[in-house]
Length: 544
Image 1 (cartoon, one colour):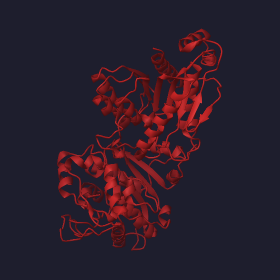
Image 2: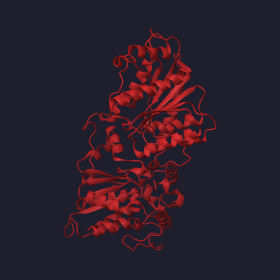
Image 3: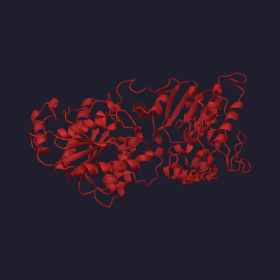
Image 4: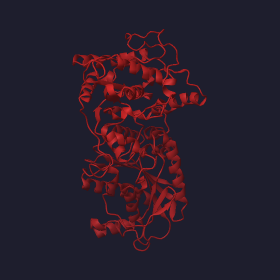
């Protein structure tokens, strides 16, 4: 979006030097040259703002038709269509109409568009997404979206690796984006589905191959096609504009993609148990589940040892890990404190099993109940990064339900967030109620990732919420994995730095050789010890 063919110059030179025939297409729009013209913008060419997605698809089709060294022309190995960001929409539309001539589609730091969905749905910045949506609601697709200013490019993706000079040029050459290109739905016949496809993921923008595999493992039908034999992936450790930050590396990846190389994803369960379905690392008591709406309660057994401290003493006395937590909390009279466990995401709507039935979530709740607290799991509707407000409302309502239960001590509540649920911490850091005795997080995302499209002042930014809070935060417990992705690890480091500046009480529990979410390849003893320590730290703060 907003760019012309000049952004591909460095990559094109390297591809040409390697013997490839390269054609960079500038798509129609105000202040842009016609496809195939020279690199300098021509204010008189396509100056109107009426260009739409169909216009751009036709231009890519024309570029394909102009190539003679490909099937349908005079022979050759076929055409590789490369689309970056918005560009993948006209690329896929053209591939659908010229499937017999296209050898491969390459999506550079872009999703795979779906039939009937307008490109606007892929715009990362949610506030920007709302502007053209208002135009669409009014029944018009005319007009343009102004290009970003120099300091605004991060609203469209990470600028990691882009030099100051390149950023200056990107800004100077940026042109308005016709609204019709964003509002018109992409229409596909299905022919492009047979064309081999490669995704190039820019990890500094927030997504890597491992994360995509985890999303596939959740069972989203829309992602099932990514496990096909003709689909491959590459990673580049850079931001959203690899053609500017690492053109040589991008050229190398494109040549390898054209040769059919790359990492292949596996269908759910094909390579073992997915991480989110891996067994909970500690033995837990068999406790009945009480399901109320989107909330599951696990109450300790009646009769036996007294209180959380008594449960801890019983656990030490038993000494055997296999019996740990199974009998420790029996016989506790009166309301109990509660630990509310909140899953991560985004999780596809209708995922089976649902998050509250995942072993990790139910296991934590049952283990906490075995230690004398009420263990609670909450299922919320975080299906997309735009859903954080709705998910926050789900969690808040669930907490009210928990506190209203007469078997729960409503003045002693802990909230524990996992993974992509981490941003939901922000509300509780900004305005912690007196009854909130502890906040915990396991392998969390603690600031919006670049490709989420959230502004710097987003409500769901725990690092900023902690730094800006005008009060002491609740005690914090953080379970951290040593083999976290660099992008998520950076958010954790930023959070701990803010906690240090605020002199907040933070207990960090490390899994040195653990991956995000754990899994069958991680050291079980490390996870057992870390989960036991983290739960104990939370319960200690409830019992303080």
